[in-house]
Image 1: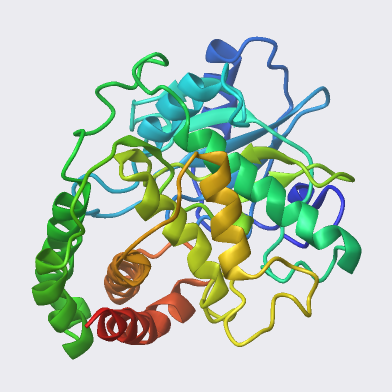
Image 2: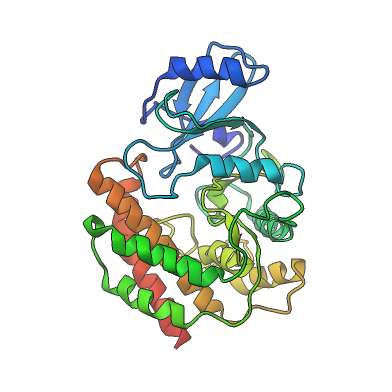
Length: 352
């Protein structure tokens, strides 16, 4: 996908193939108002779950499916994504409308979800070079307002009280990602990751909170209005759960130190010179919106998030080596794994 107005309309050839005629037959039976013929293309993103644009004469849809091949338990759960988006529909958090889900692997080979095609802009560069300098801060403020709104959702009231285990989020997450990292012997070990596996459980801050968390809240996982500084859809809910809101927000704010060639980040740049709020101002804005006096132990939250992202990239490395990675960017992400582990360890060192 390119950036700019209606950027999310851009999709190319299908890289992860499936039975397209079977999909069209299923949609005719399960999606209200569907009428073919169906034209299918694949989006640039979706290294975790392949994502497709579905065009018909009367409407555009998006289909998101699990990748083929053997997968780690609990990973790539597109049906879970559909559940949280459906629950958030009536809330202030902008999400695509989910039309239908399919659990039957016999239709196109894996489970999948068909949802609304939300038109707008997707930015792959956190510096927002396509946006006039005078408007960039407002776009950042829209992201800030959106994640604050997410963390303010009453998850019990929207039917997500059982969407995860409340409390003890850091211990559970550190255990989960450590286990997945250690279990993937083909992807190999890393001394920085090994150090973090040992240190993180000992450094968890006191106190606990529970909210709905996205798990991958970045500028390239949301769609902005074609013309205004407004988030019109948050995408990619695969890692969402009930968790600690400060873990989720710190992952988002990690863009301030993230090397831009890994994922959307501002690492090495001066945000103020780019017309963006500085990190401290951005954190303060979130605190105001969520009625916090401030955030202690910030470097722990950053270390935790770099570790978690490194573990995810370690998993991508394993899929590359097994031959079932589903994105053209998977090779680069596999190579970036040790850099993320190093950034996590540097944040760990700042906590000492």
